[in-house]
Amino acid sequence: MTYLLSFTVVMIFILIGEWASAATRAFVPSIFITAVLFAIGFWTILPKNIVTQASYTPQFVSVAMSLLLVQMGSLMDLKELANQWKAVCIALLGVSGTLLFTLVIGSFFFNWKTVVAAVPPLTGGIVAALLMTDGLKAAGITSLVALPVSMFIMHSMIGYPLTAVLLRKEGKRLSVKYHNEKDDPNSEVAKIIKKHNMSESSTKRMLKLPDQFQTPVFIITRVALIALLGNWIASLTHGAVNANVLCLIFGVIAHQLGFIETNALDKAKVFNWLMYGLLSYIFAQLSLTTPAIIGKIIVQIIVLILLGILGMFVASFILAKPFGMSREMAFACSLTALFGFPADFILTTEICQTVAQSNDEEAYLTESILPKMLVGGFATVSVASVIIASVFLKLL
Image (cartoon, rainbow, N blue to C red; front, side, top):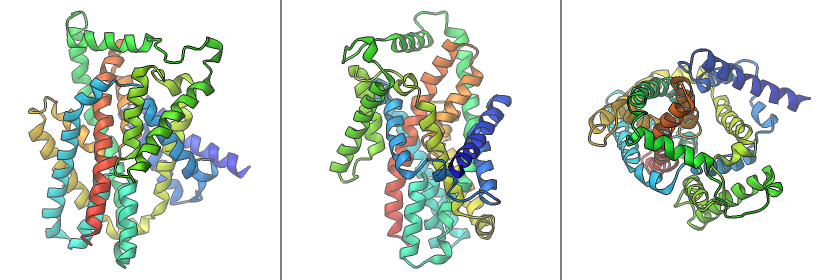
């Protein structure tokens, strides 16, 4: 019964977040509300292992992450993926702005080791935070051990609503463009919608089996094979190439070859299950600290987060026009460094669903925004942040 109770509590927290987002038309992101609920719960009565008791173990999450990234690949094509180089540049240069502002200006306020310990989690996800925590323990700097994880927790709380505001502004800008151009068959809007509808209705299959064999387990097996290939290739490079990035790329290729369908895991009816498990695991990291611990280092956290976000803003403000993006879109791409996947996917889809007034408009908004957010997130969280953390460990 304990496991079922734990699972129910986790689902209730996610449900409240989704309802809050729906009630406010995504002005309040669902993941922000759910994160707050988990934080309050862990700091009061929730057991620290409630997520693993709910069946969402690290092993489950590893499987979920790989499968979901293959699924994300099925939403793009190779040309579109290659076209996102601008989003990659914006995201990475935004991280550069964070490094510049925190290292240069932050050093005037705090000692060098404090800044070095805090910056990697600010440019990436939980992996960078845990790398820095282990490095601080190994170096015997026990006074700063709580800083990286606390930084990760606090910047996510700020990053979610800020990114939602930017994406909503971008969505409304694109909505105006949609209504102005949707009736022109030669417009960019019409071409994107046509491409989306063709992709949705495409029946291209590499394995042309009768319909009775096209079962959910057959879909999941094919997605798992692609995810396995991505992880295997990554292991051959000893981690030099990130497995998550390979799963995304191989997902794109497998979809174009007809090996997997568009939205494969949706068709297999397991997408939400995997997504909820992955989200729950991320929220479980909120159990790694306490209000007392954060209270001791709250000044360092707030100042460095503000400096880091200011660095992203300045870089995005300067580079948006040369890279052909709105300032809101460029800033949102940079902010993916604060959370990455799956938060970037959830924030984007929530905004597109609430801003759009029709299925075609939602398709246009999603096709215009989601690839940039996904690719930007992978460039920062999955790649850049790990490299930065590895370099900064040597600076302690």
